[in-house]
Image (cartoon, rainbow, N blue to C red; front, side, top):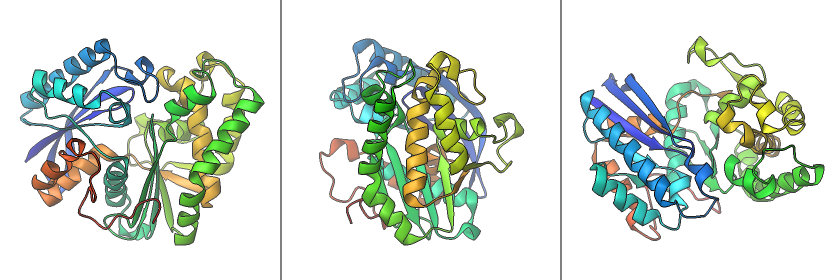
Amino acid sequence: MRISVVDVGSKTVRLVVADAEGGVPLPVHTAKWRLRLSEQVRPGGPLPDHAVAQLVDAVAEAGTTAARWGAPNPLAFATAVVRGAPNRDEVLRTVRARTGVELCTLPGEVEAELTFLAARRWMGWRSGPLALLDIGGGSLEVAFGRGRVPDFVASLPLGAHRLTHEFFDGGLEPPSPEQLRALRRRVRHQLRDVAARIRWEGPRTAVATSRTFQQLGRLCGAAPGRHGPFVERDLHRRDLREAIARLAALPAVDRARLPGISAPRAAQSLAGAVVGHTAMKLTGLKAVTICPWAIREGVLLRHIEDGPSWWAQVSRLDEEEAPPNPVPLRVASATS
């Protein structure tokens, strides 16, 4: 069975075409389109018409590419940059009408659940009780569980792009000490209850996903991506603390020259590092393993393991204002 997933993120639209061999999604083709949607809209603001037009073109090309590789009807979703836009419904209708691809948005808690599933499958059962951290452009997802699906998930408005604009004036220049302290206070306040839950659960293993964590891991000495996905990559809290000082002293153009920090993410790398370090400190995690599988693999795994009906249900969530139980799984809210 050949399947595909389209992920509309804050920076790129990514396509993965995979074969489901033995219950494992084996990629046969990947592609990405750099739209940098988050740079065209302030957090919480509407997507402008020109950004919607770019999104339509990218999703249409992704759908055509998937079909060319034998995987029609991709599982297509957009993350916080579209989910939080006031004109979200209009954007989704436009993309669906002009491309034929049924783009949807997923609640942050569902993103956390799917990412947890991917991390669990990658790390295996030997990892035991598992904690997950995932920093996106608009939100931070946290999850904990002992089985296939998490017992607890939370999605918090602590995305690297969002906080960069709110606290660092776009992040192009080094922040003042006052700005840095204000950001730390916000992150601590937002994370307090969630971190207490993770500490109480006592995870045996902690993993981090997302491009933000991958780049921070590389900055702190992890092996580069060209060494392949099977090289173990860890990120230590003490190294991340030192990285914050390095990033805070530089403008974005100079951060992009550091190992692992790409130019498109240089401005938000400092906010991502502060969120990551604060989350690790509050949860008591001294180190996390960088997991190469994340939400795209989670979507593919759920499709392989549970069949197409689950996606039909999840993809309708953006048509409901306040779904009482977005996913039929054992998932608790952040306030439980």
